[in-house]
Image 1 (cartoon, rainbow, N blue to C red):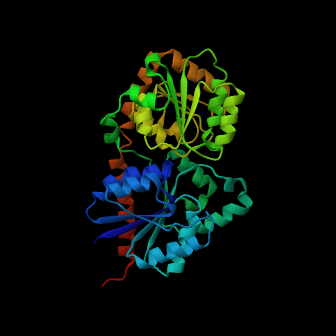
Image 2 (image 1 turned 30 degrees about the horizontal axis):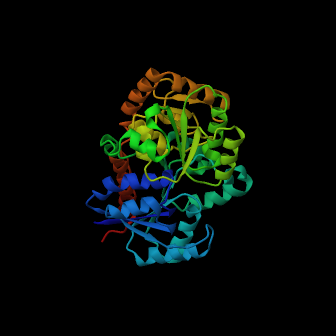
Image 3 (image 1 turned 135 degrees about the horizontal axis):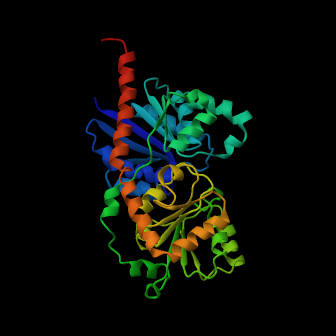
Length: 384
């Protein structure tokens, strides 16, 4: 039996969930008895284009507006016209839209799966309203995947009724992509972002969405506390806090130290030339940039938020600080700048640790879960 799986997500431009789908595609596509398709609501984006270039089928509804009710009908049309056995949803508001669309499609033979990528969101601030509402949507999914142990625990704390339905499948990456090495030299990459490599600067890198959750403002405030350190800081990403962050850089007179690069498709190249990766998140599910930094042998200073602490060990594979603590973040960055030997040791240990987070292993666990769902259906189906 050839099993057809449809992944549904808002977009495939940038983000951890989007990166995860890309990394898993290659090992999943090698499963001879499965077919995978991807449906985006708004745009295919960077990772959508990469998936297409590797032979994946990616369709886009091209619907504007995050909460446009036309999205439900669009998903329903896709489900009803395809021979899908499993529909796998990602992120909000797709967690709501997919069960509604499945019902609208009148397909009673499909299996719904959802992946929880985060440990926090604004809806959880209002449990009296959203806890019972989300309970009704979660119950429509046969399986729910958590991307880290902390995500697993926080989800069950939010929805205790999901006990027995939630499965832990940690985020993973294609390690072989980082073992190949880059085609560009460090000097070429740095020159491309306006840094004079001949001065041998210590390069700090932040790569992620410019939002409150990711804590880039904490990084800038920490840099303001270490004026005597010699460094250049690259901020790769886009998001709603860009103007606020640019103003913060000006307020602290860090314009000569900090460079905003915008959205980048060459994060692996940036990691290869960075001396320190800084991940100052306030909360996280399990950020892919952590695994990417480990695989690229880039030393890491990070908060211990969420799934970060599930992967990294303070003093062994990274320097970890409590989420939101600017003073300790500044001290950690300064220590890493001043101690190259410490950086080398942490990076070496982190590289060994990340070998357990191969996309091959993640795909195998996901395929096993799909198989369990289909096997459960066969046992429940009446005998021929």
